[in-house]
Length: 207
Figure 1: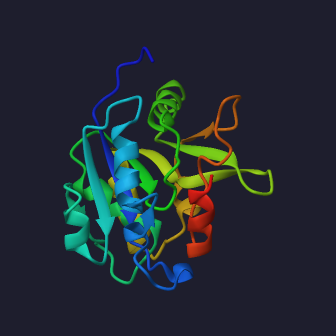
Figure 2: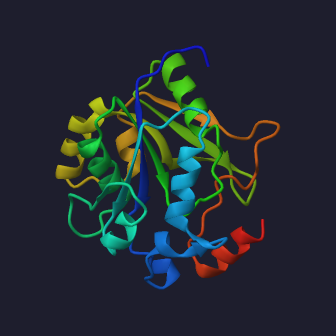
């Protein structure tokens, strides 16, 4: 890419209850011999554009996450408030102009994720860029937890969450959002597959 980009922080979202996985801490479940959160961390480090710093958003087992060697921050909103609470925590702690968010349960996400989101953000002069990808039924859908955000969105997100807002799409609809389709020739159709259950985790391992 020819555009000059500001520094970028990566945020791993690992703050959920893991309710569909029986309440286990999803990011600490093994995938191909390593915890999902560590697989995600390594995937961020392998991006085709550099990520300056990586943070983890987690609400349980903080010492286990800290052992991965990066800063760990719990939600600043109580009650497992969902991915937007993770976005908020990341924006509050981010010291770079841009924040890339990825979930801990999709360990095959593209190695050019950041590059393509950043290019769209720049070319469309957007506030944020979000991936879209085919799902198991073949439909192209937004993948809102794969997002590149300008840190200047913090004030807006604080207002939204303080007013009780919790849905990502309701908040992103308030801003200029560049959608980036990951259904091009050569794109892995399983890149955004996520493991909500232990069975899905086993299926992912077999891909």
